[in-house]
Figure 1: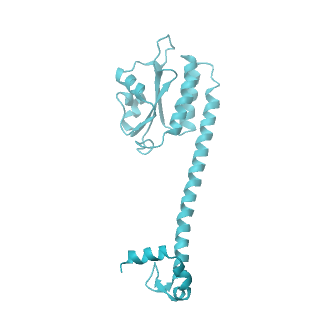
Figure 2: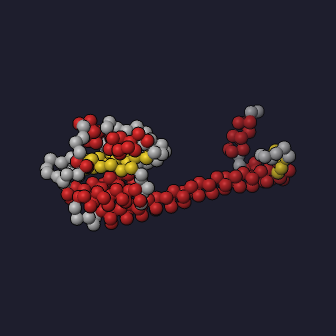
Figure 3: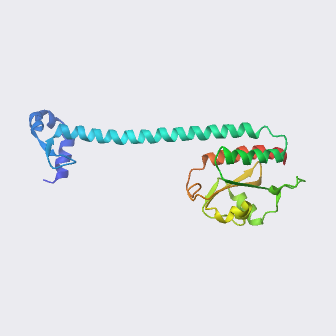
Length: 214
């Protein structure tokens, strides 16, 4: 008889454990972490303890993720309050840069805007290549990469050659009117496949704030 047959029989006939309860109490099996033999009941306790440790570890992970999400949510809330106050575009951009640098610890931030109407003489309205505009138009979700897209590394000045990770967020209302680029020297700050829920919310918030002045 194969071990699989024994296991199937015991599973299909649970009354076996009631009929031969005394025999089961006399059986011993190897200790999972040593060579000595132990009763089945003790082996079950060890198994339950190990499962409990796994569950406790997963619970700690969930608590940690929950605390991290709460902290990020609080930062987004503070950003929202800060971005509704400025009375002009220049002030709004300065608040945005300050908030992302100080509250979100994003070391490098660049914004590029395009408008069909007259606009202030700001660096954010510097001419962009057609490739960048097409790229921004294609973004339904934030895009994270270890490589700069097109000429965007130049947006960060002298730091451009040191950057190792990027996040790109399209700025849109009923149309795409710009691109928010975040960058870091840390290759793991932004990476392909990372969660982008809060980046998406940040993009919605920034878009709603900026479109008032465009």
